[in-house]
Length: 479
Image (cartoon, rainbow, N blue to C red):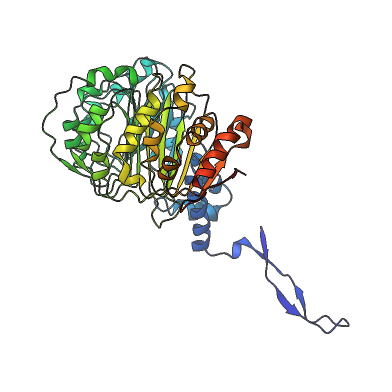
């Protein structure tokens, strides 16, 4: 590889104007520190790539050291700065690989847990990353047996269970993981997880997906274990739906705050409201920026409790309401802001007509968050529930109650079959009611693909009723 450096010269017998001659300068002229910075930029770019490509650096640095002796020296002289790791998979000849290279940290990704992975796990003081997605339940049992001792260098751990949920014993990792930064369990039961978390002082990410048997971990125990995670920035708790029946009988003790999570900015929860309500009563999250809550079908708890413990959320000026065949979701966001925040609340609800009722309940409780919304979108992402009586939705007064929570909306976007329900409702309002509903609305945008001729009459009635108000309404198709 060569670079060209412009040098001015005056050609004999040519035009006296100065011309540019490009002498060649090879990459060998670059000092070691510049090469090192270039290599580090490659590492950063690889680690910031999507999940699949983020492992590219584990292969790239191998190739760099084989370019020439000098590059090999530059790379191997900075193992910490370049985060050099030995990448081991089911097909890696581990014993040979470990004999060839210096004692770098070991990164393991496995599906079958064969002899190569066992050989890598023998170096407990070097394993820094483990990603295990077993193809067979018996492979998971072998992993648990091998990892019954401490792994002091382990920083990232991801385990995925398939089929029957495997259970991690109290002896897993020797009951302690002091250097763990990220823990992700998917479909894995870990009744003694709170005990392990007490040792993870530097944990920044805790992701529990499709977790069964969480009834064994009470909200109180979870809150107490979280209290030691002062560096935690991301928390995900998603319960396995068919296993949540055990949570209903949890004893409900007095709501005491046990955990203060000063660094937590993202919290996802999916499950029963009883568990979330009790957990939120015991934690304080003053820096939360992203709050995503998904409920199973049930009465909804008072969302104001979540809001009161997440003061930085909002103010929101964008709102999106989305109906699906089995869920209803409201998403709040900010169009501007130095540190944007967002909030999502979703309810799994298949019962006929209950989606709108659940949505009204959420919005009524969250009226303080919705009072600043100026742009509202209402859509149905899939066909509206087939069991719902459409005539009831068109004339359902709960739509008016829903709009009462959006007093500052100036622009509203409608699409899907829901567009017909709302336009028909607006056209049927009296002049007084048409002025009171969405009192600041000025712009109404409809989806041309979902347009029906029979919407013209109710739309014209609503436009006429608002004509002489302080905020007349105009409409158009979304572009």
